[in-house]
View 1 (cartoon, rainbow, N blue to C red):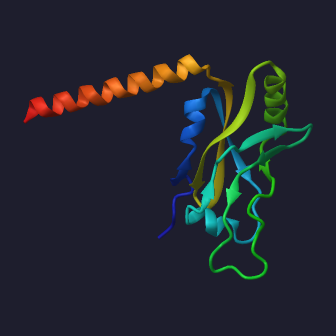
View 2: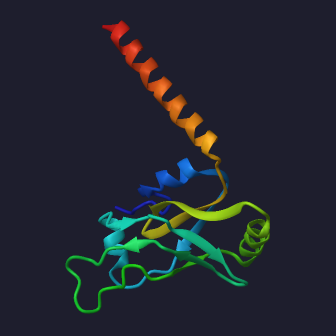
Length: 156
């Protein structure tokens, strides 16, 4: 039985990024991994804590993504916090570089997923939220939760 190349399996979302930033645009990138990193990613042994993407003239670099060493690895296991190169088209890199140089924009990894057998990273162009915006989101979420509880109680 052949596996579909477009099969999409999410591994993890960066929920903190959606809370701290307003997402303007998304881009799918490949990621250059070594050795046992793919096996650790498939096991979910990674963390987005304070990770971000820098743009140089010819490349995107993912900084701060922690991938734990593979449990069944040997002495050739990978370094957990190394910088990883993201794979994107040259025109996309140039466009993102122009956007990031504008005031208030940054690149943040928002999710990691499998497409077929390949590991992909969704990089989002984001603008930071103000404190009052974050408070409004929390307030709205609490109101929606209370409303759902009330409706559930009325159904029974």
